[in-house]
Image 1: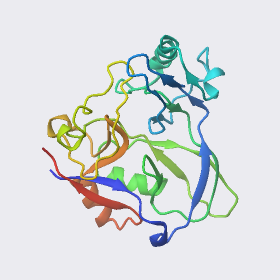
Image 2 (image 1 turned 90 degrees about the vertical axis):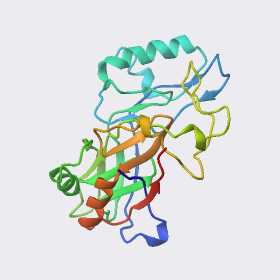
Image 3 (image 1 turned 30 degrees about the vertical axis):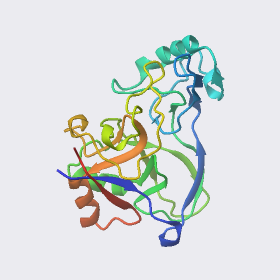
Length: 240
């Protein structure tokens, strides 16, 4: 089985100049880790279908802040845990709820303004699901269009599974912090996937040690090409 990084195309190659501006309602805070002494928050982990309105601290989670007390962060995370899928990581900065905002213009079937977020038109999602591709969960967005014949844009909830192989990472940095699970490395110039960590039940996923790096199987890539999807890029990823 071959695997590919799924990405966007440069702006000068886009035929569909659609744009959107949106945010989510709730977020876990960033954190200062007492073990590695890093202060950080991610932007890639999101659960569009999760509604935190019933959580006691929901109002506080509408704000963004850096939590210095790691035990308090852990309590907030534990409060959210029952509402998310069992495989959720809930890293600092994780966001919840649908994208809320505005959009305009024409959109390709599959749209990646940001490398960590996949929007897809409903009809395109149904096409891919009909092909039997695994891991395609589409979530509603709340994007407002001020135009006729506006597309219905969904967001894919992409599960975190799989890892970069330690051979493509800086020496001594392949393991995350044991407390906050932060990783101290940039995306490798020559990515290498860890074969033993890759899921066998999904055709699309993001890496657990690099959230937002989206990987698809050869089956998924072939389907996109065969159905004539546009404005996406593929880079084959070696596996070891």
